[in-house]
Amino acid sequence: MANGLNEAAIKALPIPDRGNKVHYFAGAVLQGQTAPRGFGVRVTSAAAKAFVLNYRLRGREYRYTIGQYPDWSALRAVREARELRQRIDRGENPLNDRTPPPAVKTVADVLDEFMARYARNKSRPLRSADEYERTFDRLVKPIIGKAPMYDLRRSDVVGMLDRIEDKNGPVMADRTLAYLRKAFNWQATRDDRFLPPIVKGMARTKPKERARARVLSDDEIRLIWPLLDGTFGALVKALLLTAQRRGEVAEMRRSEIAADGVWTLSAERYKTKRANFVPLSRAALDIIKAQPAGAADYVFLGRTRRTPFSGFGKGKAALDNAITEANGGPPLPNWTLHDLRRTAKTLMVRTGVRPDISERVLGHVIAGVEGVYDRHSYLDEKREAVEKLAAMVERIIYPKSAVVVPIRDQSERG
Image (cartoon, rainbow, N blue to C red; front, side):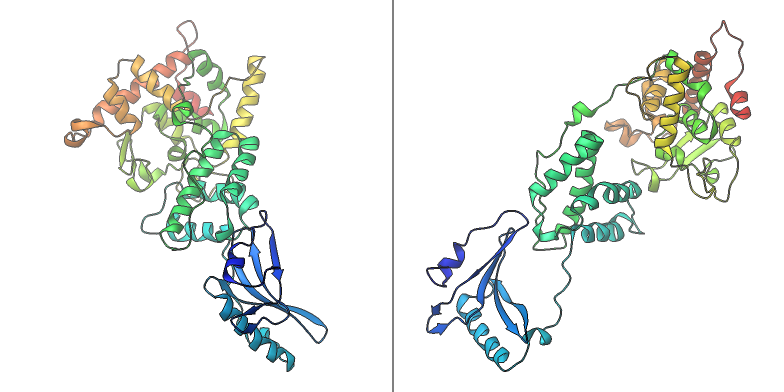
């Protein structure tokens, strides 16, 4: 600050590159107040400016932060620095009298608080809270978790999304962005100073481009079905026979299944936030009854026998390898477990099930006047639909030219 210390000079100080901070020191006279030696201004890459005093005492160097600009004017900061220098000259260390500053809240702190207070709120927890937490722990915290909340810049988020896209694909990058946007928007409702560094246009794909239309063919179903064994195999069969989502089937509880075979999914854990009543076909019930009991009420148990099955990645990879070996060629192209839900819908249509009934089996919200005023349960219609679905799957697996063995019996043996 060769031109001396004044408000105009402080405003004109350049902002350093990301992650850097610069100290400017210069003696000056301001309205009759002489700035003591060691007095200066610290400027960070977040454009924050603060008055500081560097001093040496008993052979050690110290830096005392006087206050933030413009909360502190230059004149007031110089006066404070002169008083501090007088104390230092008497052998006192002003830092010994200062209470420790509050810990700087990091991005990881914000995410942890979001999970505790919002995502896992006991009165209204997020259905996908576990997925949020896994994404934050695996993809967000290792990259930007230690960054101070107020110093986080848009470029930091973009850099993180670039790394996720390169390693995990654009869809995972967009999912992470959506989770992070929700957490940051929540924080913004509680903090006057925080401005989320996320803007429109940061997504890597468009919703229409992400929409899938993959349906497994009869040959693919016929190839996959005999390879489905163990807990994961039984779960995959149940996905196709119930037409429900992966998480809903994986967390199925025996106590949710009534004596008449109707599986009740509560509104708390269903995506539409409405309870869904799913009649189970005889084939699906036989698969469920064949699952060994554990310490928990879940039908499809994990390794500890106390929690629901969650090893989808390993299970899917093992299944793909088995398919490749059985097929003697490349794996099935571009298929996911969620494609089974779309496949089930298609198979129901092929059996003559009305589209509105198959939509109700899937648990979709019926739009328009019908969805508002029609309160009929459609249990009988849905039961007929899932039985037709099971019969169609059986015909696919065992064509007329083959010896027919009911899929219920095969499930019991597996």
